[in-house]
View 1 (cartoon, rainbow, N blue to C red):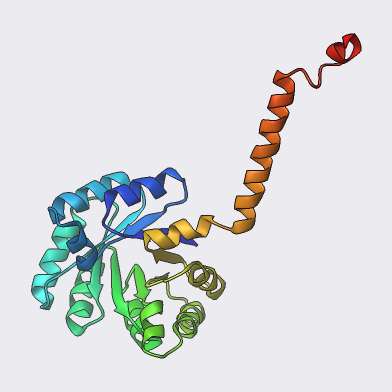
View 2 (tube, rainbow, N blue to C red; view 1 turned 180 degrees about the vertical axis):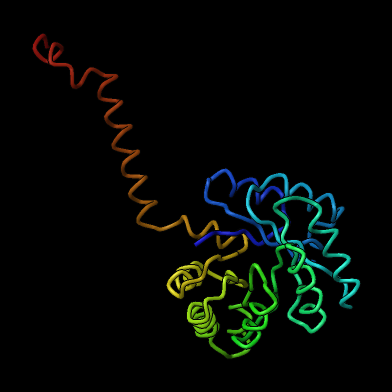
Length: 229
């Protein structure tokens, strides 16, 4: 399973990328709006920073304009993936883009039925929004599990990207469901590293090491000093 960061903040991307575990980035208009900058410049910085897939979302509501925008987004870099919404316009534009060999990510998916449509147009990625399904008093993980099972049974090549993840257990559960990719905000990525037993264990090891170094500096373990004392 590949780990993506859901952000448009280049500092967050650079930090997680240094860990050596980042496989890609997803962006959307809301994330870009938080950065209050030049959108195209932000996209180019992210595409340059990340070796893996970077999803760039279309904003045109009509199929023809969405298709034209998708062509421009795809041309921004070899790792660019064009995001289209799960709408009739998104399906139409997405199919045209996919037929031209452009990788598309069908976003705002909330049901297995919608995921089937995404696979049928040749999407590279489908993005079910797990947390938002939970918000609607439904079971997001159940929907993800169904999507993964359907794709396996039908032999669809579309990769399943679990999106709208709110906490580390969402990541773990998505892995158990068989998701190909998970994307998460910066704070969730940070929490994946942390565990109280790791923190206390590391503190104990460092304290023991410092104590040992103090003994060595003081000659406490030097047999010659002990014999001459």
